Image (cartoon, rainbow, N blue to C red):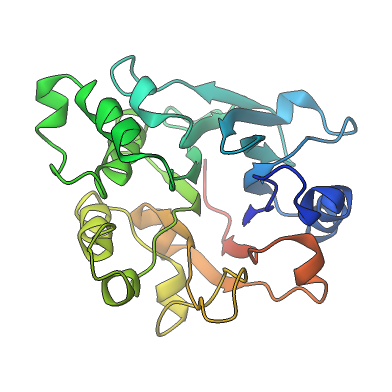
Length: 261
């Protein structure tokens, strides 16, 4: 399951209901949860089952990978990419896996709203050989840095990447400045072998953002490798009865059939 829990801003009503959101998460009982905008992690949760990184945007919150089934091991991006990620991706793998190539789990929350100067400084900090592989426009290179970090960790193996990408197909229609270049970013993901299981079961994107009535965007996505895609049996937006109280994003649930380790 991937879910932006809506706690980025101080004073947010979702911070006040954050305990209820965690209760709802436990009721839904996913094996793995990719969480964004997490205000705090309940003390009842074993810290060995959580890998997190802090992000700041008018307040402090965390991007999290949580495992119900077993402990996690943090995966570190290369020193070249770590500073440029700016906390946009948290990578982990099962700590007790017997596989020679354990599945890589990544919770993603791409940056938005940063001043142009900050974005340019982060981009310019990349070494030339790395920077050359990313587009020059400052609106789309974030996803490419995340792609590179995950690719370095997977080495061609299995992966599940979930999160709030702040990216939807309709951005190319609604954002005439082409600041996001959504189609280019989705194309780059596809070229890297990232497949979208939601589109395996649905004709198009579904709304996951509920901040404003006129924003019918799916910002939350899963991307998986070919084997995981083939073994996916469902991928659905969950419509919670108390959605408005818990978060401005709806959760997205992916079900994958058991496969040999």
